[in-house]
Length: 218
Image 1 (cartoon, rainbow, N blue to C red):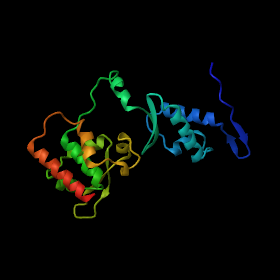
Image 2 (image 1 turned 30 degrees about the vertical axis):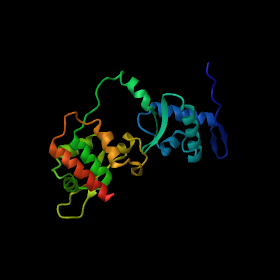
Image 3 (image 1 turned 180 degrees about the horizontal axis):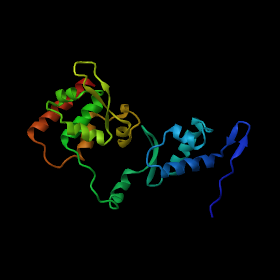
Image 4 (image 1 turned 180 degrees about the vertical axis):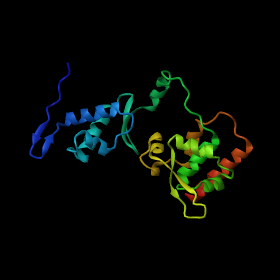
């Protein structure tokens, strides 16, 4: 039989939540919520009666509690979430043997240009890659939730400006764009889930020239 948590006390300033209860409530919310929870979300759990410092202390307690398990509490752009540790993935994949979406080299190169040069227009991307960017490539990245339009450039034609999203950062387990890996590391990571078909000569040349152009501007 589990030991019940300490009851919530009430003072003139409002309810006083015991530390163990705060941690238990946060833990429960994070375990049953599919999306990351930001600090303002966690405050809502306690009707805004808990301050940020107390929440961060509870998150630190939970992180320590789970450190020796196969699950880790991590902070990403969208907030905090529990996720399996990388070494567990090989076992979890056996429960769901479906192959993840596989993206073409052109899609991943386009994503890299947007990530490292944002905000950019479709014309900017084409200039860097040296080839036309199809509407399907943009649509694929938008449907995946990795890019979005954030405005229009004030030039003739008013082309849309594209940038990466918070979902993009969450999927890479990043807090901000400042944590993006080097371009070489990014391409190695992303292209490992790309199509297995060998790239043709034009694509390989485009990739090399695209990487060079991005590096020169960063």
